[in-house]
Image (cartoon, helix red, strand yellow):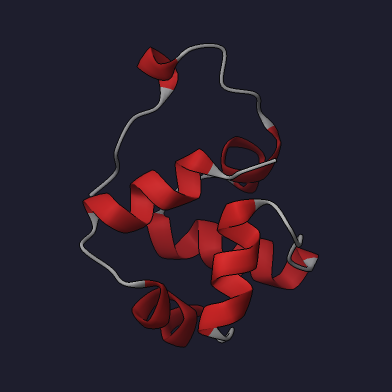
Length: 75
């Protein structure tokens, strides 16, 4: 499933996939795959990405979005 929250956080922080990848120790292509829902990061990288955006791993990767109003930006 596409990770709209990760995309929204990255966009709201004006980060490219490459910049986020460098910050969390992944490749740009892996970030693209995670955002598209084609691959799931390891627990280590889930934690790293969530910490980078100051959100919980659960919110970023596990909680369902019931409607678009529940999607918010963290800056």
